[in-house]
Image (cartoon, rainbow, N blue to C red; front, side, top):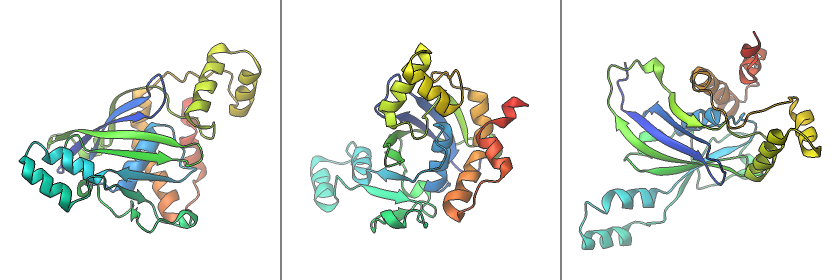
Amino acid sequence: MASQPIYQFYAELDDYSPKIWRRFQVMNNISMARLGYIVMTMFEMQASHLFCFEVPLGQNYYRHMKDRLSESELNDFISFRNKNEVKRFEVQNEMTAAFENEDALNAATEKLPHIIAWVDDELTLQYDYGDGWVVKLVLEQIIEDKELPGKELPRVLDGEGYGIIEDCGGTGGLEELTRAFKKRAGKKYEHYRQWLGVDDMDLDTFNLDDMNFRLKKVPRIYADAFEHGLEPTKQSMDLLTRQYLNK
């Protein structure tokens, strides 16, 4: 049973049109790192690059309290706490050593409810600092459902769009790649077709059932890679590359 509160998030890939988004639920007692693995799974990020969360703690707290405090109390709050405070969370391992941020907290040990506590709280996931992917998240609901089996979580409720393509150059590259596959002709199409090894790719599609299947398995593979430095097994690689669809 879902003995812990359930967090329902809305997540959207930033700076891309048409929107690529997901609405999903997780147990609220997970780590920030696990939330990252879940988001990466839903947006087709293959955990081959570093990631972090940035949380505007000051703005989240101010948003929550502004309707609960008088004007003078709000002024006291602003003078006491930095309204623009932002905290960074990353999985600290050998890969992150070269990008060491002394102010960053370890996403693998920090628990979600200690960071995100109120409806409308916001945070962003940043992935692949070269391509610069950003996913914006907002906490939509906090739900109590003791009848829901815990094994059903995490789960995605709805969404649109396929997700990202690794190493394509960020949102600008994804837009170019999408246009090429829709045109299915020309030098750019031939380049992407040969690079990806496919003749056709529908980047507007989103398979809800397949994603819920993957959410039960893929985040563990990412945890092994980021937190324990383990290479994916053949079985894991077959799962990541969707070889099960060919059976």
